[in-house]
Image (cartoon, rainbow, N blue to C red):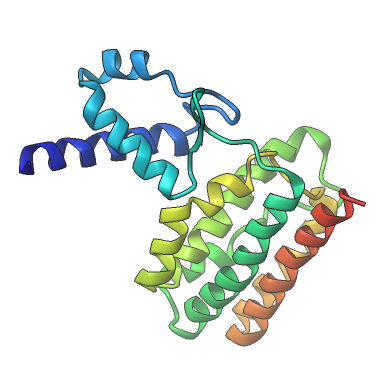
Amino acid sequence: MIKNTILTTAVYKALREKILSGEIKFGEKINKAQLMDDMGISQTPLNEALSRLAGERILEQRDRHGYYLPIHTPAQLAEIFAVRAALEGMAFRLAVESKSPLLPEILGAFRKFGLPVAENRIPEYLEEDKHFHALIVDASANPVLKQLFERFAYLHFAYEKGLIRHPDETLLEHQTMIAAAKDGNGKLAGELLTEHHYKTRAHLLSQLS
């Protein structure tokens, strides 16, 4: 039993990494036969790992059709951004007030960008955005908060469609919250980050009407 549990955990971690690294694409069906062949495992630990990922809502199990990495609707993404607004706002406040060792890197984000952001630099801006928000979660040094982000893969799913709003709209928001953090005002930095995500949520909900 112990051996089986260890193997299932290893398969779960490997499969989760394939998802979070982008190796498995959104909307893609999980190819169980291919995974068993690639990983040299039997069906039992794979099924248990898939069931665990479905329980975490990272995968979606469809009756008689197997497991899929779901594509989220604007309404579902709006729910994700509502959670990010609350959690990342607190993470930023904690990072600033604790003077996190990661704070200098956070404060240096987006320096290479100015308005307007050229269209050919949007992919670069996207990567900067991902790194910036992941850093803030890490800088919170709050294990419960970090575990929530890891378990439900909020950051991964939030970038499912790339950037929701254009950099010309979000760059100034990033710069303003960074300025608050630089001044040591963790409360304001957190509030500005919360509002930043809340605007993205509102944008997603506007697509429903």
